[in-house]
Structures are given as structure tokens and as C-alpha cells.
Amino acid sequence: MAKGRVTGRQAASNASKTLRSGMTGLKSKTAAGSALAQRNAPRKATSRRAASAASAVLRDGRTSRASRSAAGSALSQRGRTRKR
Image (cartoon, rainbow, N blue to C red; front, side, top):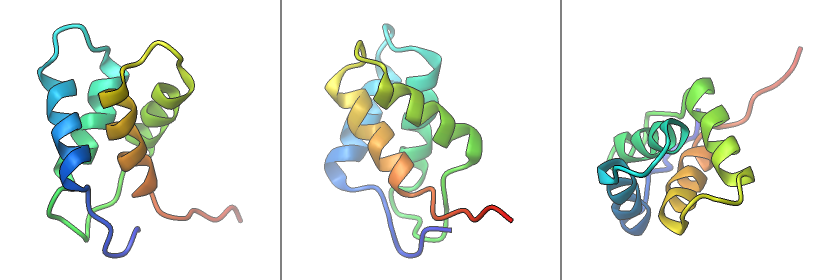
């Protein structure tokens, strides 16, 4: 779990724009929803599904700047995972 990290004001605004847009895809909206849910919740962490969606959004060259901002915020709050 990411300790104490929350979504910043600008990233939350971008996540809101992404969710309200009718042209945005499902992966972008998943990542944006995760980022927005963590706006004032330092104990929450991004799920595996949302992190995977955020990663796909960042790798895709067609996504908007707002979508990439929200996806980056969500992905940064994933926390560290260890393979055993």
C-alpha cells in the first residue's frame, strides 16, 4: 500500500475531466476513477486492475493529456509489490 500518497488537485481535476468526457475509453475511465477515489484518502491504494489499465493508458499514444495525468497519479499510488 502506498503510504500517505493522495491524488493532487490538478490530477484530480484531470481525472474528473476524463470521467465526464464521452470520448474517453474504458481503461482511461478506470484509471481516472481510481485516482479520483484517492483524492483525500491516504490509506487507499490502486487495485491491480486499475494499475493495469493506467499502464495501458500511459503506453497508448492516442490518449489525452488529462487521461495520462490521471493514469500517472493512479499508477504512482499502486505501491510496491514483491514476487515470492
